Image (tube, rainbow, N blue to C red; front, side, top):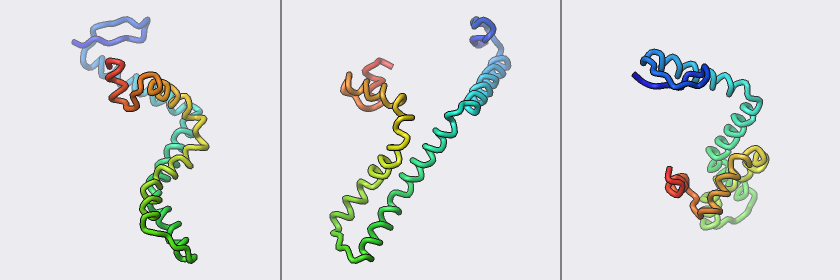
Length: 132
């Protein structure tokens, strides 16, 4: 038998597999309802869609802009084209992130603080430093 925290007073009780499965399904349902009732959910979903589409179409957008510049008579070297294409995702991601940065600040600030304090910038490195 498994153990589970039962919401009634938060006691740890032995439960059968079926009881644990029912409890897990109820918690999943409650989490989904809470997510859908959260007024920030559309903002986060919309922001993710905008960022994702901007990053996904970055190469096509840059190719289109470079093509239009060449059609207008601008001479662009191959080195410049390669440099612009290589940095296009970064540029477009920053342009898309700028308007929603205040929404992301509570998420990013702790990660930046950990990076500043420990000098570690990867999730695996942070887990290693914290012993997780």
